[in-house]
Amino acid sequence: MTQSPTRAVKLFGTDEPPAETRVLSAGPLSAELDAGNLRYICLNGREAIRAISYVVRDQYWGTYNPEIEDFEIEESNGGFAVRYTGICRGEGEEFRYSAAITGHSNGALTFEAEGMPVTDFLTNRTGFVVLHPVAGVSGFPADVLDVEDKITRTTFPELIDPKQPIMHLIDSYRDTEGSIALINDAVATYKEMYKQLGIGQ
Image (cartoon, rainbow, N blue to C red; front, side, top):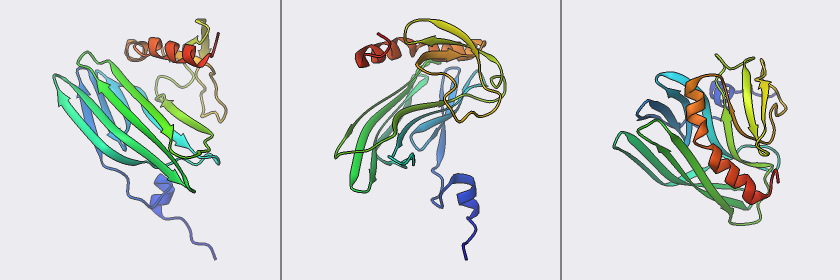
């Protein structure tokens, strides 16, 4: 006879207790730091992005729960800086990455990560996942700047879509000032990264 899953498994997918969270502020920006990732990112009290996470998936699409080391957090001059090392281990494989999150006093936000496998390491996806909020986004128009510098008008899906609704993008935003301001600072970084990877050339 199989046991029914615990309440924690139903809510979080694991019996491990959820990590403590901390609210960080930088000028008009606020965000909740949760296990090295950001949630509920708001500008002037309005949610602009639901979450930004650096995610490492194994070969079966399972998501690693990284060990966090060398964790540092600094709050000063109206901003914040978070730095840490993430370690993903499993089945004799290991991947390490260093992450840096900076909130500036003008509300600009950067989240950078750089990683390297310590051993042979199979992954289906390693990189950033950005989740948009539901209210004011689901079903609304979005302008997408792709890797070839073309802007396409599209629409965010009304329901969660198992396939990637927008591909090869550099920047996407809702028609609100907060989201545009928050994401625009990342465009140059993404363009340079895609250029180095030879994507869109």
